[in-house]
Amino acid sequence: MPISGPAPGAIEDPPGMNEDDLIQTTLADDGVIQMAGLLPLLMHVGGGVGFGVKGLDGRYRLANPVMERLLCHDGGTLAGRSESELLPAALQAPLERCDQRILSGAAVASEELDLPLDGHPGHYLWLKLPVLGADQKLQSIVSLVYESPPQQASRTVQQTLDSLRQANQELQRAVVELEQVASTDKLTGAWNRRRLEECVGSEMGRFERYQHPLSLLIVDIDFFKAINDRYGHGCGDLVLQSLTGQLQGMLRGTDSLARWGGEEFVVLCPDTNRATAATLAERLRARIAEARFPEVGQLTVSVGVAECGAGETWAEWFQRADQALYSAKAGGRNQVQLAPEARGAGDASENFAANFVQLIWRSAYECGDEAIDRGHRLLFADANELLSAILSGQAPELVNPMVDRLLGDLLEHFRAEETVFVAAGYPGATQHIAEHRELVARALATAAAFRAGTQGVGDVFKLLAHDVITRHLLNSDRQFFDHLRRHRSTAA
Image (cartoon, rainbow, N blue to C red; front, top):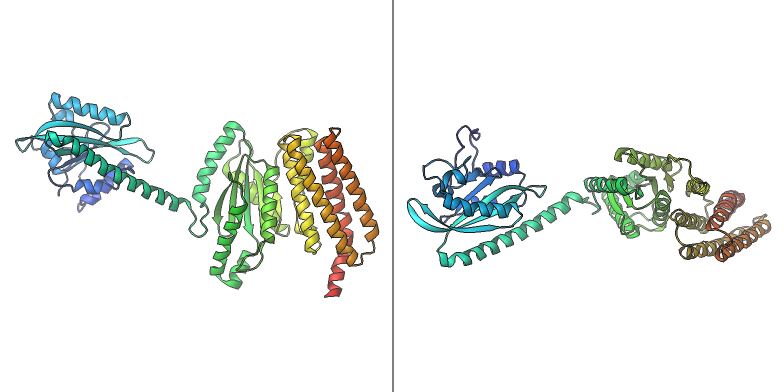
C-alpha cells in the first residue's frame, strides 16, 4: 500500500525507502514512544479505514490512500496540507473540537461526520488520538476514520476504545520491562551506572534546594583478581552475585545500590551525614568479613565514604569518595576511610566529632585473635552510632539504649579479652585487668550521671571515644599483642 508522496517543495524520500522505513523516520522525528507499537499496524489497516498523522501545526505528515481519497477531492496528496484547507466550514468545527480535547489531555476524541468517498456519500466515525514524545508531551495527532452506520457508531466507538486500551496496556508493560532492563546490571540485578547517575542528579538537586545531607559509599572487593585467577571468572561472577545479595540485605530502605563496574559497587545514601555513612560503611565491612561465601569462603571489602559538599559537582564528590577508597586499599584493605571535609569554624563538639570519625577500624589494629578483634570492631561501630545520634540531635530517650548497648558490649569485650590473655600467660594480666575495672567504673558513673541529667551525652561519648578507644584499645591493648602472637606461634 503506497504512502502519500511529499508535499510540493518537500524533500523527496531517499531511493529505495519503503513504507516501514518512512514510518520509522517519522517516529524518530517526532520522538514517539506511546504509539510506536501501533503505527505499523494502523498503516496497513484495510476495509476502507482512513489513517493519518498530523503535526501540532495542523498539517498532515503521513496518510494512507483511504485518508487521501476522503480529504483530497482534487486528487492531490495530503502531506503538508491541513483539514481547514480541504473540508467545508461545517465539517471543520467538529474536528477542531476534537483537536482541542486532545490538546487538553484527552486520551481519545471522536465525531460522526458525513463524508463522500469516491463520489459516494457515507457516514463516518472520526477518531483522534494523541501521540506523546519521550518527555510525555503531545507531539502529533493520529486520525482514524471508519465508515459506520449511525446506529452502529456507539458500538464501534466502544470496540475501538477497548482495542486501543488493550494495546496501550501491552505497550506500557513492554515499556516497564525495557526500562527495567535498561537500568539494571545484568549479572547482579543491582542498578547499573546509568540508573545511579540519574538518581544522583535528582538527589543532588534536592540537596541543593533543601540542604538535606547526602553521602556516598564506594565498596570494592579486596583481591578480587586473585579470586578470578584462582577459581575462574565463573566463580568470580557468583561471588559478585552473592555479595550483591549481602549488601542489599544490610542497606536501609532509602539507600540505593549500584554496580559501578568490575568488583566495585556504589551506595547512595540520601538524608545521611558523613558520621552515619561511616557507621553504615563499617557495619557493611564487618558483616561481609564475617560472612561465608559458598564459592570462596571468606572475603573482605574496602570502603571509601564522602558526604556531598555545597556547590560540589558529581565528579568532584565521586572523586573524593574514590580517593578515600584508595586510602583504604593503600592502608591494608578491609577497612573504611572517610574523605576529608572542608569545614568552617564550627563549635567544639562538632570539631571533636569530626576528628573522631577518622578513627575508622583498620587492619593494623588487629591482634590476630578473632574474639578480641571482633570486640574492638564492635565497639568502634557502637561509638560511631552514638556519634551519629549526637550530631543529629536525638532526644535522650533515644540515646539511652545506645549508651546501654555500648556499655554492655564493653563489659563483654573486657571479659573475653581477659580470658584470652590470661590463658596465654600474659605477664601484665593483673595490671591490665585492673585498668579494665577502672574504665568500667568510670563509664558506669558517667552513664548514671547522664541519665540523672548532671552530664551531657558529649561527656559519655568523650569518655568512651577518648579514654576507652583512643587510649586503651589503641595503646594499652597493643602491649599484649606481641605476646599473643608468640603464644600462638609456640602452640602451633
